[in-house]
Image 1: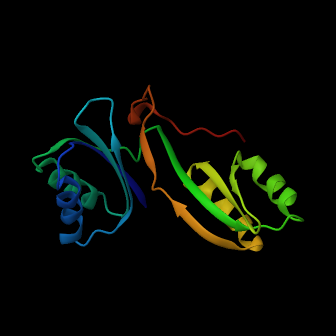
Image 2: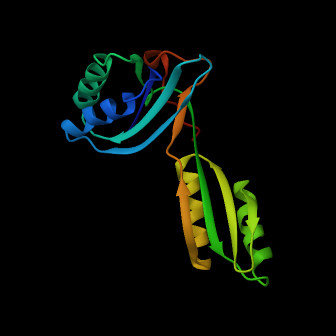
Length: 172
């Protein structure tokens, strides 16, 4: 299962190295990491995506991260209502004859063309990982020259319902 863990940390040299070292020592694989400044000067937000089926592993990771000196807050936001996005830049082989076709293909994804050259286009897409993957799969048939992707970045939505008060419902 994909788990999303966010941390707020003091923005100091070596913090990222110490935190990723913690994952490495315990043989946990990190699928993606995003790091950036927050609204508070000197504080950064890190978002880690890991795969694990065991709740105890996430609990152990959270406890270990909380012990780190420069870590201010750790949250496993996997089961919360969250806003999660990823950015991808995709360089696609494009001839003058198929550019309109590619543009028509990317339009439903709200992707944009941000660079055009004689033999290629660079497409930018922002959204959930599944959306990015779907567009990449569609563009493969044109020939992908290069892909650059950020990891998932996420945080909880403004209002959260208590997990125990959420009840499954069916529309059937």
